[in-house]
Amino acid sequence: MERTRRSNEGRLREADEAGDRQFVTALARGLDVLRCFSPDRPELGTREIADLLGLPQPTVWRLCHTLKVMGYLVAGSRGGRLRVGAPVLALGLASLVELQFTEIIRPHFEAFVSRFPAAVILAERHQLTLVYVLRCEGPGPFVMKRPVGSSISLYRTASGHACLAGMSEEDRVAVLGQIRAREPEDWPAIERRIEEAREQIATRGFVTSLGVTEPAVSYAAVPVVPPGSGRAFAILCGGPSFSLAPEVFDAEIGPGLVSLARAVAAAIPTSR
Image 1 (cartoon, rainbow, N blue to C red):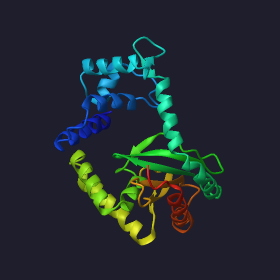
Image 2: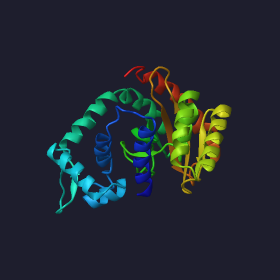
Image 3: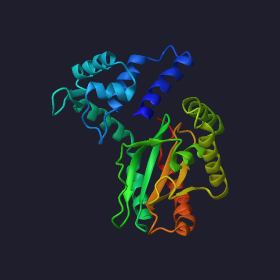
């Protein structure tokens, strides 16, 4: 909850410090209200939303009232609770249409992951997060919990570090400045992990995290930054540490992801 609050405040502070006169704070806060809802939090009260965003409850009440009038929020199953309404689904559909290129990529993902008891995911950078846009599961009982549409940190995950490593120097420096401003206390450790990821990408083309963030799960990730697209992606493969030895990640999964990234880059539209 604290990290959500800092994320909201940091975004507004960055726009204010940049002197962005085109930035509409009220609209940003309304969108942040919608982002509070997730599969884990399908219904929320205004007090919970206020706590998540670090905003006064009267402000949140007005934002929620406006969203209710527009149909983007509707009454939940209990008094005072809210959930997202049908218009949000329409926005999601528009996004899915834009992501039609994932259907070209899907057969490549399915062929790749069919060899391992793992999952492979394509995630796109959005601000300081990665959003899952495609997920395929391999054979066996292992299932990645996060569905398409989930978001993870850009700077606290192996896939995020891989994405940063693949970005242009100009774009990466700008994003690192945002991270440093948002996480001043943790910045030295974050910077060290990002630099380690850049070294791995430079020497072998992929990043591994073998039971580090989750002891039972190991990961490999590669960046995908198609020239001319203005977008940055990462491909992540994760599987159970007990059945996928480090040698498998180093000799098979990692190099395989490097090849997979080339197919993905070729399928992503070069203009929006």
